[in-house]
View (cartoon, rainbow, N blue to C red):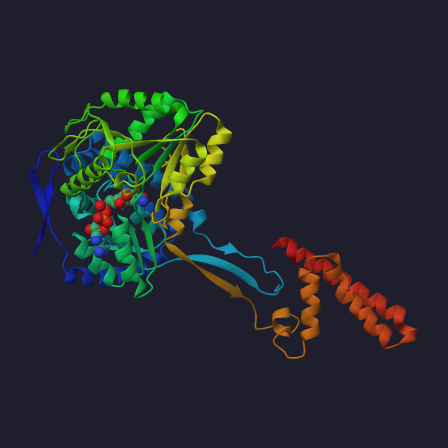
Length: 539
Ligand code: NAD
């Protein structure tokens, strides 16, 4: 049986290992979770919330253990580990308060078909496979698992092989809540285990990972049309416009670029600064970058801003992109040195869109800054990319900032800050283009783990119901009259049926009773028109 080692990227020390799941484990997990799904889905939302709150309690009690494992597993500081826990618990708190209202049945107005009742009810999919990344391995595994469970699904979680110790810890945390344990299984392994889970016909797959993996899973799920939700890579632009607070933009732009050693999906990956502020901005960025400390410490009060890259693959990517940029004329103003998995925060200028550094996801501590003429060029270049995760715009002229934000092709925009939109539990986060189709946070995160079932309820067809009448042949004229009365756009279209009735009575030359019949029909048409008007209004 193959093992996954736990490796501290800062020291290279191996501090444990775990057995990878086999095909038999995957089969067995499916079998159990499918059976247990029938039990979990039948629990009321309130009961599911009660059980998931027990997990919240366990997580809060285990915060020191979690931050210690994250520190060893990724090299990030204990404080950054705590932030991951805080984001998850904040979200849980918010979701648990709202879940009953989100997941309830909703009445649907009947429109023309007034003799029956209609409603929709969110239903869970069944067994959901959640596949997680290594950059925020606690938050990005826990959050979709909890949302899927809350919605009534059972879950197979496959954490990243790169942060296998966090995967093992997640499993322990679930097992500490015996009432929850039967409904979630953690299967450890690399991409081959992930691929085998996808092939094993789960009812929905949720991936947080790279766009390359997203494309592979999209191909695999297309064979069975299994629903697939994905949160993928980004190349998030930062726009520094002429009315920006340049010092603030430099300070928080640097933070947004180098937080988590640049390994944040919505971190600042490229900057477009308009020429009137460019020089001042670059000077301020260099001053801020000088202040950053790099290093590893397991202590609670770690003074370092940046730790190591999490594994060797990231070093290869940053080396390759930096080399390509330098070969094409870019200049490194500070940083650039790599020692093991530690890389200095690096500022690069004289960049353009022929360079990989400006087009491909870097996911490391390099910040390229490009001088642009104006807002229009900045927006055009920001959109000139296959990714569309998020962006930030810096300008104290709010009209300008919002105008630019509106024109960006991304899932979220932060005005005058970076990354800080992500932790807000009620604000949906996710990408467009090749960055994703899923959403985390808010009602949208929970509801995407459900499908809507629609119900139409009533007694067997009643003769006076329009839905019954239109089943019989010979109702063309009735249908046409209703079409006009109910949906006519202009008054002319709406009164046409009445005019037609009056005209047909005239043609029949039923002289003695014309007035009486016209009054009766007109009255009936009027009442019908009012009724239809009311139903339209209710819609
Ligand atoms: P990755 O794609 O290499 O791996 C993600 C997960 O997919 C891992 O668990 C891996 O084992 C699994 N996997 C790999 N191949 C697979 C296959 N063929 N079938 C099934 N599963 C497979 O991504 P990563 O390097 O772990 O994470 C970094 C990437 O994630 C970056 O691109 C980053 O931008 C992205 N990310 C996106 C978000 C977001 O919210 N949009 C958040 C965090 C990270």
